[in-house]
Image 1 (cartoon, helix red, strand yellow):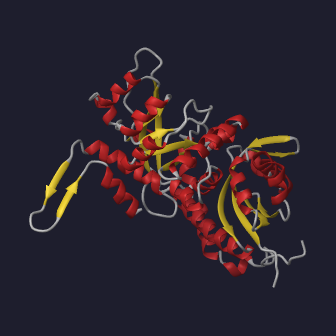
Image 2 (cartoon, helix red, strand yellow):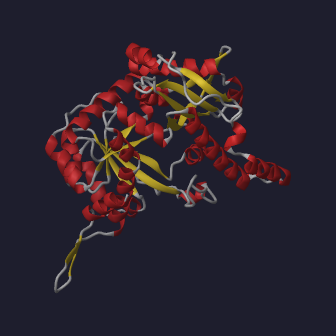
Image 3 (spheres, helix red, strand yellow):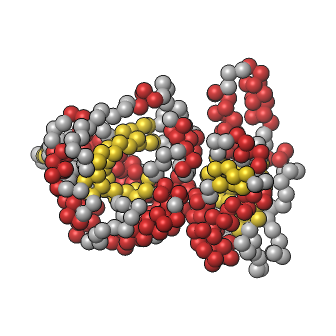
Length: 163
Length: 250
């Protein structure tokens, strides 16, 4: 059976400017990544990677981004991700950095990884938090995160080949 | 200090702080390194494991003259305090000397301008045998486009000579945003011409082996041969088997 195979790259946006979190949106991130690919790999790289390139999932609170690309060109994409320096939106430029967390073949594997990663982050936050009610809040969310609850949010497993 | 915090959150387990000593000025005193406990009252824990993060100190000597190398042989107490010693040769002769006879752990390869000399195979092979690692920086590549070209061309010419062994990729980040996570740095290694496994090794096992090389250089100053009489002949040397042990362990 011939089917298009994709790779899903999970990244995290790091920045020191708190206003940057508000302007994380899918078009801005997509443009920034395409611009980085064009700078590093030129026209050929940009054309290769943009065959099936979209931003599948975005979480502005934690700065998590899920990108999709073809399996043949995911190396070009991954090697160009360190070169993303700015995010632009609404005529504002914010310096930022992208940190790759996980590369998976389906959205579900990336989702599983993200849940584990968030759980670890919550544990670290739990160690650092000083307020008692914050502590209880975090503990409650730790106990309640699981795969079945999230399934309604994120979408299908992988694409059908009609791209 | 914020850079260190970002390092830890991104997932590095050991960080080395670099002091650069340049010999163009008249008299340079090598200052004592800043001890890491001054920066952090308690070192945070690595994500994912339960060990504390190691912060090491590192000295880089920019040498453009053979007389500068005498400083390494001097028994100045301050040099002993640094965990890792790196040398940045500017001429071919110095590169040869650094690979063959100098007592260093890392040889920095210039990435910010066109190399004035070509690499030759004999000194590179001798450096690999001695357990010395070649270091490439990646932060200039992120900042500037012309530096990116020089970085890639110098890195690829190094790869062609040393076949991807003994490479360490490190950042010379001055701000927290110029740092990249270990997975991203391994992907940058792919751009430099390394294969996938070599690129991952350049970030993890080679760095570890360089750290161990530095430790053995600090602690052992001589060659000790111990011979067990009936069957086994066991020999202990200063630098080489420690690196081999590190490569098989890590």
